[in-house]
Length: 153
Image (cartoon, rainbow, N blue to C red; front, side, top):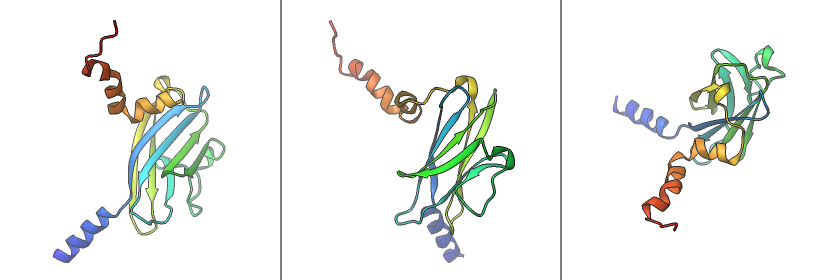
């Protein structure tokens, strides 16, 4: 039993994980979603896929087939820096769930789901990424003058 526990813990320690899921709008009805993931050292490139429930929006795995209605609407690609990006056309009104799945051949799948509300979607820019990904850093930078008791007059 001890050996099984050690193998199980080692497997979890070396597995991939989804670190962050960021999204913004490109154009009026189009979504860009970036899934940042972490891998163990010297790992082969993983497969990435985006889903909505059981429906496969797109994947980088050539063995899986994209759900037919999304063939011209969704595209997933891997980018340097451990990022899997989804470009999704014609985002419907209201809220939509998007799940990023990162899978390596021998490991399990790491997932992260985010709810995107079209009305609250910010346009893609450096600021929108900063607001979503670095809220602690942004808060520190904005309050730095107060913390340092800077007098502007």
